[in-house]
Every structure is written in C-alpha cells, then in structure tokens.
Length: 255
Ligand code: PGA
Image: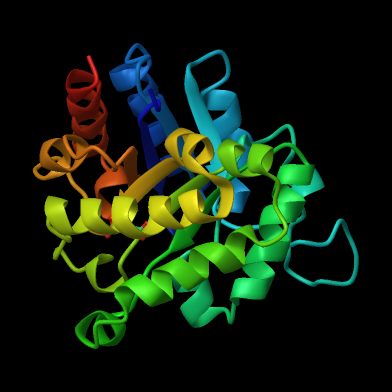
C-alpha cells in the first residue's frame, strides 16, 4: 500500500522567524501521525532554521526548486548538493515556475535527474491550464508532461519519486477539482502513463498527489479516492489549523 503524503508548499511566504514558528506549531500538532508522510517546503532562506526546528521530529523538509547543474555561473540558483543534508524532498516543475520562470519539460527532466542522483526525492508537478482543460486537451497534455519529466529514468528512480497533479485552474483559486475529476486524472492519466512506460508494479508503487485548492474541508473526499495518494497544499499549508486537520483526516482515512 502506498503511504499517503501531505506536503505543504509554502511558496514565497514566511520570514525565518515566521517559518520557525509555523514549523514548531506543526511539529506540536502532527508529529505523532506516523501513518502519513508530512513534508514542509519553505523558501530556501528558511531551510536551515526549519530543519533545526524539526530536528528529531517525524516531519520532513523539502525545497521548492533547484538547478540541475552541480555548481557554476548560475546567479541566484541553488544546486542539489547544496540542498543535500538540509532537505529530503524537492518540488520540481511547479506550474508557477513553468509560467513565470520559463521552466520547460526539458529542464524539469534535467532537474529530476539531478535531484535523484543527489539522493533527494523529487515531487514533480504536472497539470493543465484552464484553456487546455476547456479544449479537452487535459489527458494528452498531462500525459506528455509525465513522459517528458520521466524521460531516461529507470524503474527504480520512478518509484522513488512523487508526482503531483495540479490543474492550474485550481491553484490558489478556491476552485478545487472535484475528487472524482482529480482521481480520474491521477489514475487514468498520470498512473496510466507510468504504467504504459514502466508496467503495473511500478505504477502501483508510485505516489501521486493532487494539488489545487486542497483544504481541510475537501481533503477527506480527495483522500478517499483510490488513485490520490496525498496532496500538495499551498494556501491551507500556511496555517497549522488547516494543515494539521488535513494530516489528521488523512491519518483517519488510512487507519
Ligand atoms: P493551493 O496551491 O493549495 O493554494 O491551491 C497548491 C500548489 O500550488 O501547490
């Protein structure tokens, strides 16, 4: 059985002091919910302080991005080696990175390979825009993104990573996909594509998250779906009340 994951993407929020306070509150609230993988992904500058605040806890830390190169003349960027030891996870190819920072399927693939080589667990994001959704292109587009992100990876590497399906029209809009829609794409497109490429066993072992206005109100319904293995959470991850409730509900669903 796939272990569920509640990953908080804090985006560009929280100063160091605020990040530590939130991490400590999350630790106090959900450190004992051990049947759910709990991951917090603060901004780069917060990582050392958050790592220290969560030391000895059962809560993992992730970054929100990284560069594919090991080092060099890439002003403003951070490499996998720099993150190693600081984080266990790294979000890659988030739609905001693709949209505002010109990330492409190719760079997401390069980053995924670099993260795996460094021993980090990538959370690779895919998802269609509203226009693509309305044009009926969701399946072909999302499947293409999955194929491109996984290009050149071994079966072992694919089972070690996490894929997050995040329809762009649902991110930060308060308009979540229905649990049925989310399950249809997580299962019928993302997992089906992994199955096409790597076979049944690998597809069964790969964790697939849903993201896009997931919150403490809709999480139970989402987590009751067979192909949704967790959530990548933006806004609702910034408050211990909503994030803690999402972790607790997921723990109940998987009890
Ligand atoms: P949201 O963001 O939960 O605020 O919609 C999700 C994400 O972008 O990962």
